Length: 134
Length: 220
Image 1 (tube, rainbow over the protein chains, first blue to last red):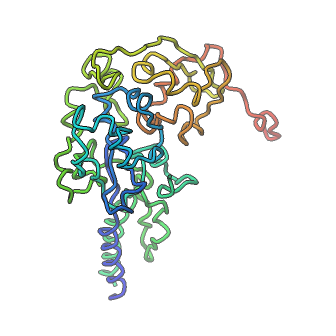
Image 2 (image 1 turned 120 degrees about the vertical axis):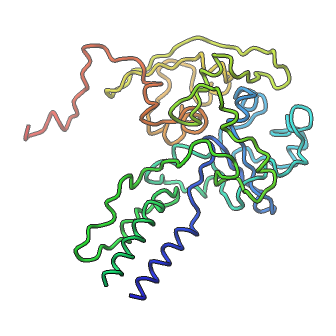
Image 3 (image 1 turned 180 degrees about the vertical axis):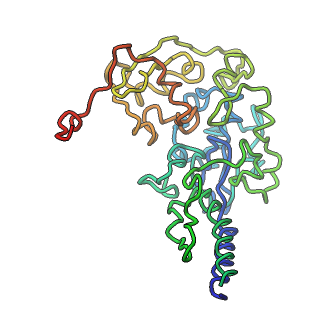
């Protein structure tokens, strides 16, 4: 009696402690190539916000962003040189980089991913595990 | 003993759907469920493997990806505010971005400095015949060139030559070909979105080709 009650309590606790499914907006990109290792929250890029203001071409052709989450190896050094995010987030077109937490706003430890992607939503996981995506 | 069973049942009832909802819960939880004697398995639940969002377009502090402990998270714009008045769709962001653009409801820049630069739009439809019974594919260059530049797709993802590109749904689902964008940023691949690409009806006399195994079936 006691034992099963204990098991029940533990399983209930496990359910509460385990992370709930994230429900971020479709196409939100979490970039955690280097952030965690540098003691920063991972960066979260909202595609929806940017596509209201710019066509895909601006970032993916003009600025050279590859179509791959985490595939651009973005660093703050590159950003302050005017590459990638730094092409706009420079105080001219958009707010400047001293607003760290505007991008570095992800839950620490979240792996690099594109939220809501087909591979993520499949019932059976594919050969590639989420966390190993580079 | 009766209380015990009741308690276990209640726990399983509460715990099961919550576990199923979790994106990381790859293992079907029914393995751990053992029904007591005379009880029906609590694994017989609806939507055991359905990953459905509880709520659409959640605000950053509640979306599970943004950290609510970060002050800036609360400054970020919630998507619902931005989507107000935009045409809706059944998938992705639940916004019909192409319609929003064509109706002039959003004015995304084609050049990052100059808001007056017009995109280089090409209106050319490519028809691709499909082996299976689903309608054939019509690829419209128009909406694609409204958003993208030729160099985004050609020649790296699609060779700009007739019959040169082998495309199948498996590749797309794994993020290749059309799947480089569709299923990640542009509209996703779901039952409700098939007909957006598979939009040209098969000829009236079209019949699905029969499989070898069916033609050679000795019990036919």
